Image 1 (tube, helix red, strand yellow):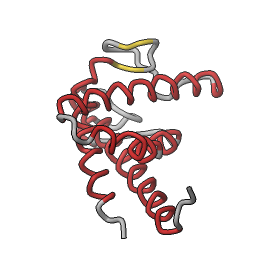
Image 2 (cartoon, rainbow, N blue to C red):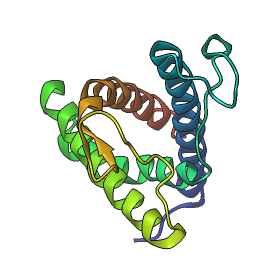
Image 3 (tube, rainbow, N blue to C red):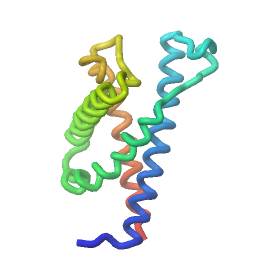
Amino acid sequence: MPVSRGRKVHIFFMIIVFVCFGITTEVFFTAFSDLVNNTPLCDKPPLALAGYTYVWMAIIYALIPIFGVLLYDRIKNKPFWLRLPLYVVIIYIVEFTSGYILQLTTGSCPWHYTTGLNIMGLIRLDYFPDWLVFVWLVERLYVYVNGMIV
């Protein structure tokens, strides 16, 4: 079934929105994490709130609307306490897989975890509550942006 030009434009718009949202969220998260943990970035004091991300993350965040199209309509009527952990499991799978692929192709995973409850340095299980908040925000944004279809 062919996709209309309007739908293609909307999907492209959604990809841009989620790339920007994901990268911005990550920069804020890393800045505040470094503040809480008192770990300076690039010799700046933690109070400078210098956050960071990786260019590779744009590709990963671009997957959000693609997964949304495949998944959201199928589970939107399920209770949020069931949907949100499912989204986090998907994030863990994507984070682990993409991190592993980056490790194989570039020689390192940009977010290699050395602390917390991590699996092979590629995912941190103790970030589960943080991911729950993130996926709740993502779902709300996804519903809002999808409501903009003309």
